[in-house]
Image 1: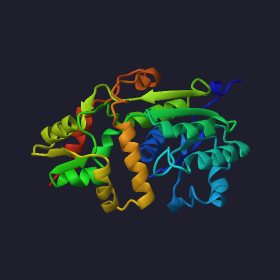
Image 2: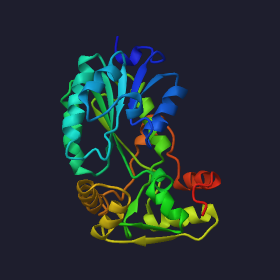
Image 3: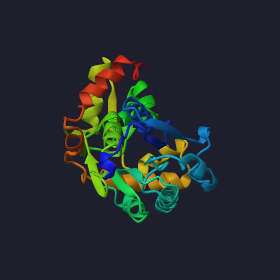
Image 4: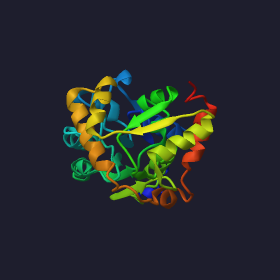
Amino acid sequence: MTQSARNTQNMTVVVTGASGRTGRRVTEAAGAAGLTVRAATRERGFDWTDRSTWAGTLRGADAAYLVFPSDVGAPDAARSVGLLAREAVGLGVRRLVLLSARGEERARPTEEALRQSGAEWTVVRAAWFAQNFGEGPAAAELRNGELVFPADAVREPFVDARDVADVVVAVLTAGDRYAGQAVTVSGPRLLTFGEAVTEIARAAGRELAYRPVPARAYAERLAGFGAAAGEVDALVELYESLLDGRNAYLSDGVREVLGREPRDFAEFAREAAAAGVWKA
């Protein structure tokens, strides 16, 4: 019997980063699908930097969603993901799904480490999240009336993090259908960051401004957000590469996996505005 023929309703899924942007939504989607979710967070005793915490979290699970903190292309991501993936396989956790990024060349070693682990793996490469405007530093800046970011006229097909979560859960429960594949997901249309802020302003019913700056000039703001020196340098390099226009195209992963169109950015903006995300 192939895994695709097995009953997934009794599946236990480890969700790393379960309190984060996608992990939180994967947890919700997996629960709605009838799966048993095991949240892997520091509050629950899991730490990517402490291998002694891994086995207790992984043992007895059937699958895992892997989100490496900071970035999938971070210098230590490939080694950590590879080690955890191999430990998971050794403990019987065969199905692993890794969150990666479209167009990020630095993420490829991490993806390769997953492929070499012996797992039934799938990589989900995502466009920039729409929710990046509604959570964290960007949301705080917009509440103050202006978003500053190192992207000028470049266009991005912002993807709703809920669509990412739905794709992850569908891939996890599809047996071996997506094993050994990379699924690339985006939203349904291209927007500049300035156009995205304009849509947010319209939904929020207030004036909002967008000011693009060079990536190197953005480093000081990153430090102000609390990023460590090494992390600042890595993020600046990431912005310089990802925001050079290489991702100005649409991907059909949401339609391929879910059989429907991805959520539009305007839907995200309306819902977040109604929730008061950008109130002054």
